[in-house]
Length: 178
Length: 261
Image 1: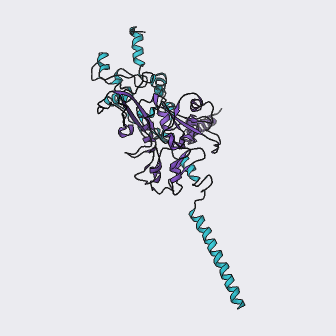
Image 2: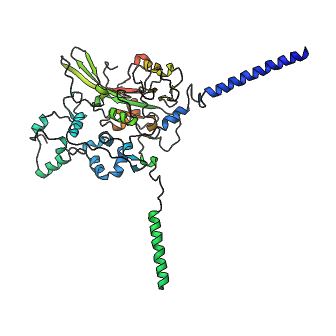
Image 3: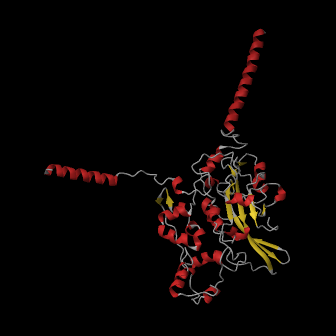
C-alpha cells in the first residue's frame, strides 16, 4: 500500500517532468532563436535584410574607371542623370573590383527613344522649370536638319549643350533674346 | 667590383624584380566602404543604433516628369519579375468636368512616350504620381500577418522575413496602398523596402539615386542638415496618402492634389 502510493507519486512527478521538458523542448524547436528580441518577429531577419547585395552603385563608382566620360558628364546639363539608368547596373559590369560583363551601348533610334522618355513635349506634366522639352518632328524642322536625324547627332548624350555652345562660340551666332 | 660579384648582383636584382612583378598583390584593395560615397550622413563607418533612427521619404509631384528611371532602377536592383512592381509611376489626367483618368502602362517602366488619346474632354491638369511603400507607423500589414513574417523594425522600416512568410497574402489585402505582391517563384510576399540594405550602407535608395529631377528625396530625420529634415521642418504643404486610414505614413507627398489616392 505504502509502496504503491510512493510509486504512484513518483510516476505523477515523472510524467509532469516529461511533459514540461517536452513542452520546453518543442518551444525551443519551433520558435526561432532571435524571435522577440525587438518584437513579435525574428530579429535576425533585419540582419539578413542588410546582407542583400546591392546592384546599383552611384555615379562616383562609375567615374573612377571612366574619367573621360566623367569630365564631360559632370560639366553638362545631364549631370543629375545616373549612369546606370542608360547603361545598366554596376553589378552587371563589375564584381569585386573586376570587370565581369559588358554593358550594352544604346545606338541610333534607341537613343532618340531614350531622350524622348523625358524630353517629349507631348506629355504636358513636364514643367519648363524642371525640364526642357521638344516636340518631334517639329524640333528637327525648326533646326533645318533631316527628319531622320537622331538626337545624338547634334547633342552630346552626356552634356547635351556641349557642341551647341561650342558651335555658337566658333560662329559667333547669337540667339534671339540673348 | 670583380666580375663574379657583378654577375651575382645583376642576378639578384633580376630575381627580385621579377618576383615583385609576379607576387600576388593584396586582393580586396577595393574595399566596399572606400568605393561607395556617403549619401546619407551619419551611417557609414559608424555603429548603427537601430533604436535611434528615423527616416523620411518625400515625393515631389511638381518635379516628377514621368521618365520611369525609378521604376527601371527598382526592377534592376531586385530583378523584379515582369508584371509585378515594387514601385511604379501613375499618370493622373484631370478633365474640365473634374473627372479623373489614371493609368500606369507597365508601371511606368517604359516611360510615358505619348499622351492619352482616349480622353474626349479638354484636359485641365495632368501630373505623375510615383508610388511606393508608405512605411506606415501603424502598418496594417504588420497587424494582420499571422506568422510574424512582416514586421516593423525599430528603425522604422516595414520588412518581410522571407523565411517565415507562408504566402497567405493576407497582408496584400490589408495594405491600403497596394504595394505588396507574391513573388511568382519564391511564393513569398515582396514589397518596397526603401532599399534597406543600401540605407544601412549609407547609400540612398536606388530610385532616389537615379531620379534625374530630384522628385524623390530620402534622408535621415536625425540629421538636421538633411534635405528631408528641412523640408519637413519648413512651411511647405506636405500630404500623406489616405490619411483617414490612420496609418501615419513616413512617405510624404509635395504638390499632391486632393484627388491623389
